[in-house]
Amino acid sequence: MKTINHHRRYPMQNLLVSLLFSLFSIQSFANKMLPSAIWGFGLVVSNLPHAVSNQPHKKDSKPHTENGVTVSVEVSNITQTRGSLRIGIFREGNPFTGPKAKPDFFKVVPITAVTAQQVVVSLPAGRYVIAVYHDLNDNGKLDKNIVGYPKEPFGFSKNFRPILSAPSFEDCAIEIKENSPQNRQKIKLID
Image 1 (cartoon, rainbow, N blue to C red):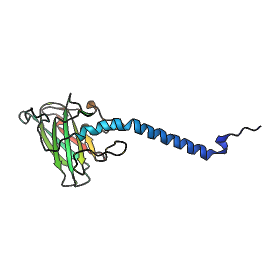
Image 2 (spheres, one colour):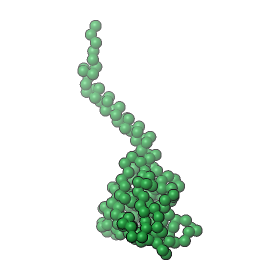
Image 3 (cartoon, helix red, strand yellow):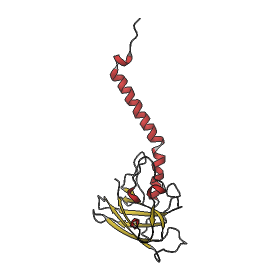
Image 4 (cartoon, rainbow, N blue to C red):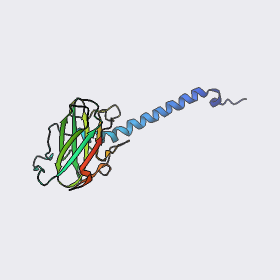
């Protein structure tokens, strides 16, 4: 009796089965891992309020414009003249990701030209993360695709580029203090 080697006889069928298995494995990974990781990231910048303010997010806090450090944020890679830039600034210790993430300071800047936008804020000295996204349709939230990855351009301080999960505070943290080079941030939007 002759043994038939199916791998030799049906090489195309075996290749197809291998490819389908790989696709299902990737899809399974995407369905299980990516949404939870990137969903957390989406909450970071989706919770940015609609109003324009350099005020702390908490209602009972006083503005920190006196004795503050001037911070300049240049946002580049703006490719469309519609919508607004939504900028959230998070202090160290404030949840940076997850459902409770709310920026300590925020600013909304209407986009009127396809050029880099310069935003200036005054902050007390300390460690912060800056998160920004281009809200193309001005719906106040970061729109995401089927696997939870942002469909609208976004960016972080230190130009951190997340790969498979939301960034940690340390990934994007900057030290704001008098005469610090980190008081000038250049953020290139990821699209």
